Image (cartoon, rainbow, N blue to C red; front, side):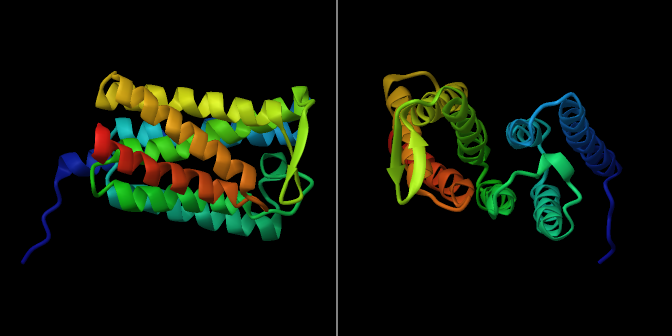
Length: 231
């Protein structure tokens, strides 16, 4: 049997690669510019944390095929692992703590794409990823800047303000994604609230950067269950 190449598909494939590459390059370029303007490494990293996660929306919008999405995910995982050894990401990945969080971040995105893209459940992957990227990043920034009411869980210092920010932002993310894909209804609002509470709880009890794995995977599994049961 001969191998037939669809010219239109090839054009679309290269167009998708170029668009995603342009987006990633822009994010890293802006991050380096912010760092050069005096932004702290932690805030720069949170900017990249959020902006990189938004790639899931771009990939969903331009209908990136599974094989290409997994290729990007595998590359992301490899780059983050190499960065631990050679530290070539500079201020983008440089914070003064040892954690596998960046690798778990890329691994969770890859796993969610691998599981939900074939089922045409991109919204579930998006909920899990964006609850992590937006919720966790905003929680950290709010906690560091305005956190006053501290508490400890498993030896980790948390703030009530940071946890509340995580819940609010995760709820907003879930509400928008589920509302526009599943329709606006009371069950949808309650589902978004349940996912936000679960994501916040997972973030609170996770240690050593594991929240970048537990939050997206846990949120996605709950989202899938709620969609199948109520939406």
